[in-house]
Image (cartoon, rainbow, N blue to C red):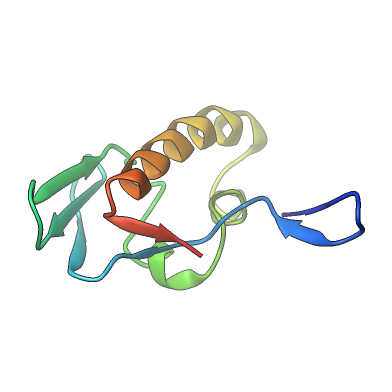
Length: 98
């Protein structure tokens, strides 16, 4: 998703994410489990089957990724929860915004 700044420049509103250096991710029944080389070493993202490891290699933003998987009502509800979780992982250095 793109937005327009007053100067007419485009800015990406739906960020793609990638794993930070030293981070690995694996799929579990509850969602995703992240391993980091720095402590604490384990992080959980309760994403169910909405996100997979491939999300971090796809180059897609969260909204674009999810629109391919669900209808609009479920999409809006889960989108905000996943955005919050991804932002928390980004603040901790587990993932990076692209």
